[in-house]
Image (tube, rainbow, N blue to C red):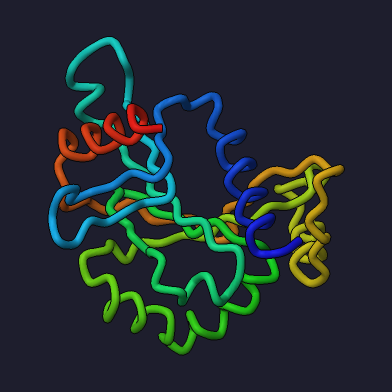
Length: 187
């Protein structure tokens, strides 16, 4: 798949995986109307419950940035992470190429220099064929070593190869929910 097709594949698969959690919006713009608006590829809100105010206020925001290749990671097209949890959604091949940059701090230095406002609690999600048992380390290692080529004729699911830690966010719930709502209304 080319870069555009890979991005669409990852986006569609991510939306499909969030269908049971309907509170999400694509292309969420923060700081709208300022000289430096910031766009998040996809933002999700998970309330602790929906029957009382305190459950809603205890909700969690998760930001997802979709990156189809290494060039996309360093393209300057956004690594915006404002949630309690944050994920880069990418292919297994891209994750494997990025591992050295993560170990040698190249990625973290790039993030700090270009997106200093972003949270640093970032996890990674990669698509794996649906038949892979996520609880079987041998199957996962085999998929890591020799990734299955992305194919629209195969069923896929996401694997959190590096889970995001849960940290506090700097933006208010009202602001983030409003930005999500504005994004939904615009689409």
